Length: 189
View 1: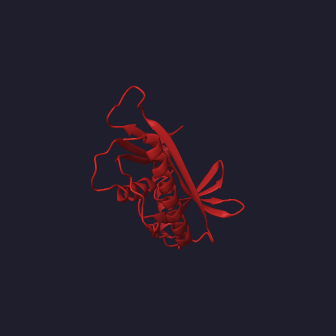
View 2: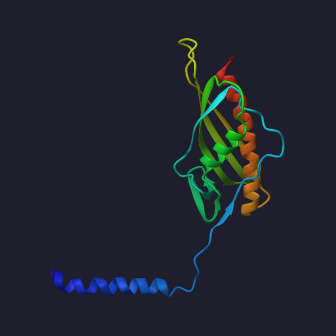
View 3: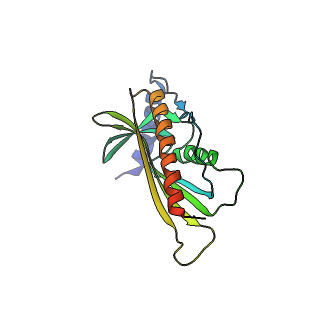
C-alpha cells in the first residue's frame, strides 16, 4: 500500500464531509426544558431522617425517557428536564426534610424509573429504591433496610407538558409511599 498517495486523499475527504454538513438546510433543533410541577397539597415530612445520596440509573439523564417495552427505552433529544432525575428527586426530598430534630437514620435513594410508558395506555412512572441506615447503632439487629416505591399516573397525551405534569404527580405519590415505607423500615426511634 502506498501511503504517500493516501495522504492527499484524506484532507480532501475531510473537506467534503465538512462542506456537506455546512450546506445542510435544516437548522439545529433547539431543546425545550420542562420542570415537573411541585405538589399542590401538604407534603409529609421525612422526620427522623438525614438525606444521604440520591442517584439514578445510568440511562437516566436530562432527556425525557420513553419506555417502549420492558426491554426498550428511547430518548427525546428535543425535550428535556431542567435537571437530571436524581437532582429533581433530591430537591423534592430536601423539601420534605424538617428544619428541626435530630435524625435517627440516613436515607439514600436511587431513582430506577423516571419515564413515560407506552402500552395499552400512556402512563408516567416514577420508581424509587431506598436504603435506610441507622445513624446510632442500637444493637446487632439494627442494620440497613431497603424499601421501594413506584407510582404511575395516566397521561392524556404524549405532549411534553402533559408528561411533566404526570411525572410531577407520580413523583409526589412515589415520595409519599417511600416516606411511609422508610419510616416503617427505620422502626421506632
